[in-house]
Length: 208
Image (cartoon, rainbow, N blue to C red; front, side, top):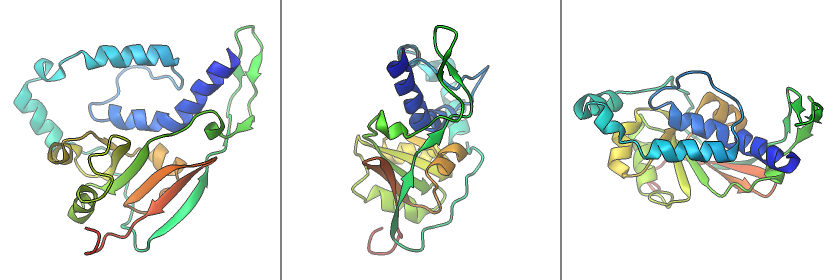
């Protein structure tokens, strides 16, 4: 159980906030749990993918609501200087993690780096969706229409951007912004060995 369970926790620490970004589009209902076994999570994703939600909701009502939908804005200023920094993802457990024998698998206060257990292969790009220059920059960047890139918004309605780009668009949660120590947008996030690299990019006439 130990290695599998610990790996699952590492994935939650890195990816939990991104799952929230996807869920926040339509709301989170019922009781939530911090950790879900990978097999169970995959089964839920498969079942959800098989549902035609637009048949359940009136198409026009759904689209109108989504076009105007904004979550709580996570305001980040526009980048004023091109710069790159390294973020240490080392995490300290705030609670005991029990084993399946009534004991403690990992005690409260245990410190580790989730990147020792998982490899994060995606590139995250965070922009302000209310800033036309940032949207235009992304559209003409090397990150657009790339399967390994996940686009997240700090502010703005996702639906018009998703419709324009014809690719999934998510929201950057407060948890994610804090975890990656984001200070400005656009920001590009990717793994660099045992760390995450955050690059802030100035949107100018040359790179729009």
